Length: 323
Image 1 (cartoon, rainbow, N blue to C red):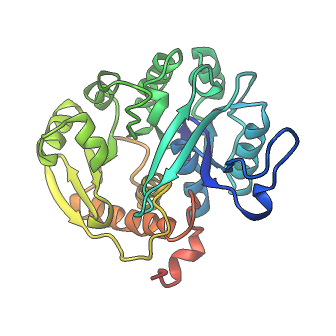
Image 2: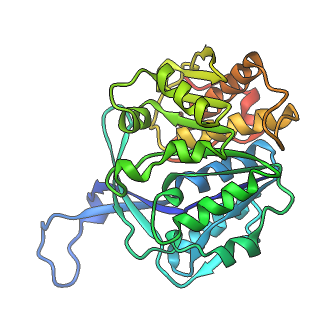
Image 3: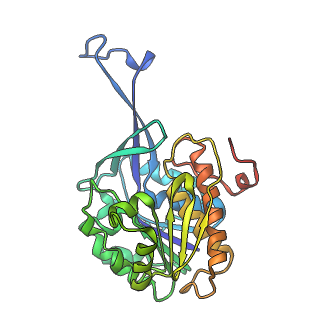
């Protein structure tokens, strides 16, 4: 079993209203501009939990989920995907909202509305009550590691989990919500076994630094496996300084929302299938790590082939990839 700790986010995709949606309402003049929002459940850690469960890995989600309308959306999605939400906290604070726009390549840019949101207010007592529940792996990252007031409680919980479980981290940087110095990757590597990040994350965290040099610095700080995803160019796998590169399957891209989270899920699922989670990755070699990354790339590619953060179910991996 894998526990995933972090946030849920309401992803609101913006588009100009037209037709029936553009009719004037009370108090508005005919022809007034209008923006329609389509809200989907998201958030990096929640997406990862959903993808893991759909692949067949028993998965717990540890989140502070609001009682508001978005919170109901989050719970329904997690439960429908088979995620155990018994470790979640029902929170009085509002949900985090991200307004997203897509460019011509399907890449999303986000504007976050996150002040005072439920996700960042973890206490040590809440996390102790949730516990690991016998999980062989704890995955966390994204904003849970950098947002006050709960970040220190999350960091302590992850560090303590390392004594009995594999710890995985995805920085999933959001420059608009946290400065570079908040992403203390060397500190995280002191207790993390796996660090997965995108090339955009790397450019923010270590501007101008070759990926291999950054990997070596994080290995020296304690992380055994570092994986840098590169979109259509595949991924770089670095295990204790031994490297491999994996290709990304070719697929017709609708958008890339949730692709990185799906990659993380695929990586952890494959390592779990191989019986490698639960410790310090002692039995892992670079070829096996590359195999796990190649599997993860296929999970991510299938997520790119559909709209939004909608990762595949296990049976869909046996079907031909959409082109």
